Structure formats: C-alpha cells, structure tokens
Image (cartoon, rainbow, N blue to C red):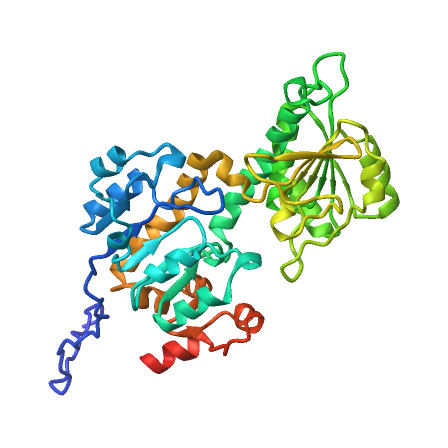
Length: 406
C-alpha cells in the first residue's frame, strides 16, 4: 500500500555487543612530605608557602613541616603555621628529612651538606653566586633540583618571575619617591606633583614587565613618564597594556642623554642578554644628571644597566655618585616579603597538588613540560645546558633521561 512505511530489516548476522573502552589508569594519589626551612642567606625575608597554602595541602592529606621562625621575615609566625596544620620543627637536620624541600632562597653550602639522597629541592638559583661544590653535592646525592624561576605555566610564561617583576617595577617608583624626600636627604620633591607644580620626570629603561609596572605606578602617582627600549614590539605592547599613549623611544644615545639630563628619576629595567645586563648608560651620562636625582637599577642582580651602579644591600641601600642617589639592591621583592611570599605560594601550592595527583614529582615532570623546564639536576645528571657548560659538567637532555626510564 502506498504511504505505508517499510519496516527496517535487521539481519541476524549483526551483533550488538558493546566494545570495551580503554580507560586511562590514573596513578594513585601520593601523600607528600614537604619541608620549609628558615632562610639564612641573601637578606631573604620571603617564605615559599604561606599558612593558607599549607592549610590547603594539609587538608589534602599531605604532611608539612616548617622550621621554627621560618616565616618571621614575612610576618607569618609559628602559631599561624601550626594552626594551618603544619608541624613546627626546631632541629634543622630533622627538617631536611622531608622528601620535598621548598625554599625561597638558593641552596647554600651548609644546606647542601644536610640534603638527603634522592630528595626533591624546589628553590631559586642565583647564577652569579652558584658554586661548583653545591652542584657536586646535588649530583652525588642524586637530587631532583627545580629552579622555581624557570617553571613555566600553561601559557608558556614564567609566573614567579612575572610576579617578582611586577613587584620590582612598583617598588622601584615607590622607592624613588622615598629618596626624593627631605627625610632621606633627597631634594624635597613630591613624586606625583600637585596642582600648579610640574610633575616629576621619570625615565624608564626597558619595556618588559618591570618597566610596565614601574610606568603604571609612576602614572598612577601623576608623574611624567618616558620609556626607552630597543624593541618596538615591547614598546607597543607596553602602551597597549597600560592603555594610554606615552613617550616611547628606541635607545638612541643623543636622545637618551638629553632625557636623562632632565630626569628626576631613572629606572634601569633591562632584560639580561646571555645572563648579563648590557650597560646602556655610561658614566658620562650619569655625570650630566641633575643633582639629587635618583637612579633605581633593578637590573643590578645581572650587572646593572648604569655604569656607575654597584650592588647595595637592604641595610645600606643607597650611595651617591656625582650627586646622584643610586639604589642598587638586588632582591627588591624581599623588601615587601609578605606580598612576594603570597605571589610565590600562589604558584607553588597548585604545583604541589598536581604533584600528588600525578603520583609524585617524577610523574609531574613527565606530564608537565612547564615543570620540566625548571629541572636543572635530575638524579645525578645535569639537565640544564647553560649550567653544565659553565661548570664543565656533562649535559644530559631531560627528555631522553625520562624516555629511558619509561
């Protein structure tokens, strides 16, 4: 009959048997034992995990040991950590039995001796002060050492470096404001200026993250800002990020000398080239600067970009040359240690959670290329080409090492 639908024909040769699905077997969640020592070097006031982060990790079932008074530089006390569930340890050697050590300062000679065989150490590395004997200890003890400033996130950026750069940029301008005042023997200028009084002239060399946050802070205070960098792309990006037009220029010596002679504040925020900051302001240019003007050389930890710069400390932060005040403290973030500690902790706490989920640090290194980027020692092998070359060690590619282990 027309209009009638034909019934579907099902052949008995078809079989509707469900196929097995191959599900990925996730590793069993690993319980971590994390130790946080008290820092004794580098005028270090920061701590790598805050009590809030410790509380999250303890609630996830991990053990966290904190050395007595470890957080005092950041105004986090033993009581804060014990309330968060951490165990306060008074014996340094006892603390160094933790399987994962998280530090906010590089490994010192004394600490290298205390390290245990097969331990994991997450800390910064300060290349200019890195010693061969420390690396030898790491090799002998088959340590997995991760430089936290080399850890990348999923976007391919360095989150801890970025946070510290943001802090350094903002601090540079606030520090300059301090040293322009009479109280600190400055020439008595308010950095922002007021109605009827021309604003302070701020010159920033370098348009990276430090330069951007220095510019933001200076603009926020009402200063007149001029930015120099040899990368047009970086200058354009800075203007876009700030959201306003501002004076930008490539580093052409005549223009730079002219603007420096008129500047009240000069901030050095250049990125290092092959580990060393290029000197772009010779002594003759500093000589022509106004008496009482302030130089903040943020690049000092890699040599500095002013020829007259020399490293200073938080205790004696400034010196005068040609009547120009120089502030050349390398670890600027340590002067606002609580903010810096929270920034570092925000990056490291989720990494520790991922570490547990992937079945330990080896699993994390296998699955996260961003973490692999920070590994410079792996179970007796130097896996950072730059460090291996500098200390005449055999370099081993980490990816090849991991491939042979699987």
